[in-house]
Amino acid sequence: MNHTDDDIVCPLCGTHYSEAEGRKCYSGCPLQRGCQLLACPACGYEVPAPTRITRLLSRWLGKQVASR
Ligand SMILES: [Zn+2]
Image (cartoon, rainbow, N blue to C red; front, side):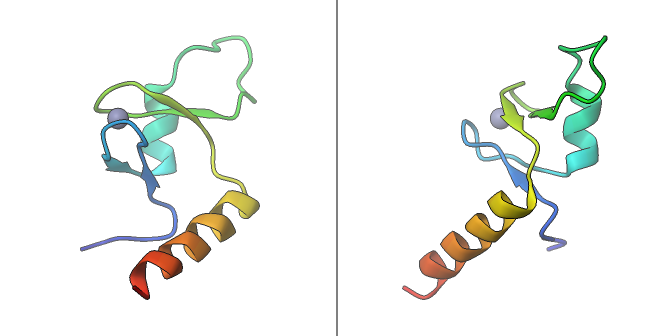
């Protein structure tokens, strides 16, 4: 469907969510707004916000999986 590169996939439950959604859910660092963590809206599992490198990596990994 609307699967974009901005999607984050929770490694725990597999839920897809956007970076904005993850930021909204993450409230562990009220004093540190620069904290680069996102939380899964479904299970609350925290993941580091995607950087350019992790995006490249997941794209590369996705390609590996897709080409099989
Ligand atoms: Zn999850």
